Image (cartoon, rainbow, N blue to C red; front, side, top):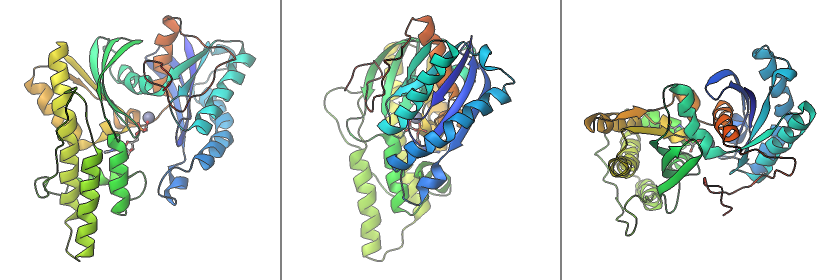
Length: 338
Ligand code: KG4
Ligand code: ZN
């Protein structure tokens, strides 16, 4: 089954063609990152317009690169939630028109389920059940992937997403948007023990996380240093911040893994590209005698292939949309409107 998959929830317009959920025939991305950089973050209105400008040509490019005709497409999949509403709407409307004109089903895909599915592309042998830490610019949660379309959230951030904090700290340090990747590179040159960071104690669910206190503490440290004209060891600050994020993510995820009794842990989303977080998971998962699944960097960030992969399993489960499909800025990974 050849699925043409569309992703437009933030600042990447992406169209991929994926066969049977696992084989990427083509994965085309038009990134808007450089455009938004001068504003220090995504400007939603610009994002929507650029998606409209890019999406038609990108779909043609995807067919051309896969050497396929439109008749060979069996279904159209699209990210319908969550994301910038204007941006998601562009993808949904394009997908509805494409499905209608091709006479094929439309498959709505939740963006975060797509991030998890990036692992199916990277690891053809990976099958549920497994545990997955989803860690992106807008979300941070530990998910029990019981089956391809049967998920349970075991813990999540109570405030900011981890990626949001990387971006905010990066921005204050003058790094180009989105700050995560640049902060990661800078951190590799620093000493992660130099600046002690707060580790909040949370009551309630022991698998829940929090990042806003860490973000505020890091920003205060930077501002105080600047006000006092003290020298800031930027690489070590980046390393200390990243260590604190990892110390929030890794022990909770490992605890969830023990409690589930699974031997397989996957990580997903843009922040899964972080070298320190990857290394910490590799060490801990190995010590636990379990297996770690981490998508290559190209599949950690937003892309169309991951949507095409999850779409196949949604299709098999009968989760098919129609021309009344709408876009949603917020919707839980379990499908509830928030
Ligand atoms: O999954 P994603 O591409 O988009 C969302 O669904 O949000 O994640 C983007 C986030 C941004 O916050 C970006 O700074 C972060 O992923 N990111 C990183 C790294 N690469 C991207 N954060 C830390 N280290 C990285 N190497
Ligand atoms: Zn994403």
